[in-house]
Length: 189
Image 1 (cartoon, rainbow, N blue to C red):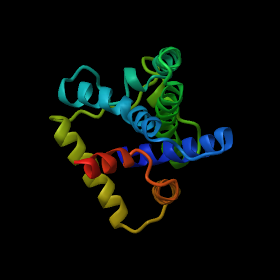
Image 2: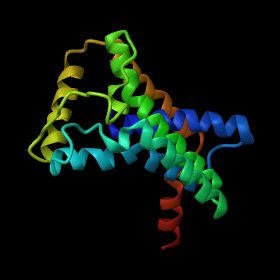
Image 3: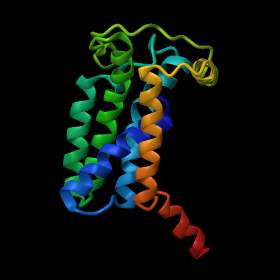
């Protein structure tokens, strides 16, 4: 998944959770934490692999369920003690759903459960060496756009389009949480 897909995928589930649990729409700061959590693994592993050659793949330590679960637990405890529990829950949902978002498309494409991206150091995702973080992003973007240009609506493409469409609509219906922080600031100035 791409960053916007990870964020919107997590947003769908978080919004539904908040609506069911609290009978309201998501607040701004928890949505910011959600987006941060949904991008966190890529912000750690992609640079370490693509820019600094620490790992063979952009699916390494921060993508590992063995690392993610303790981090999410620690964030939950810390945010609970500081009075920001909802932001901690949102970060955890974003982080864990990032892992689901990396497993889901490959599982759908292969027709069988594929856990390698989230089982570091035991999993064996394909190496994805790039000259730099920028070339890694550009290489993957071209591959992504080329796939869409074929107009072949595979189950994975349908999943991607569905996530973007449903997530965006839900975010609009919820009143643009997260973005409102910037709107308020601009109005004050």
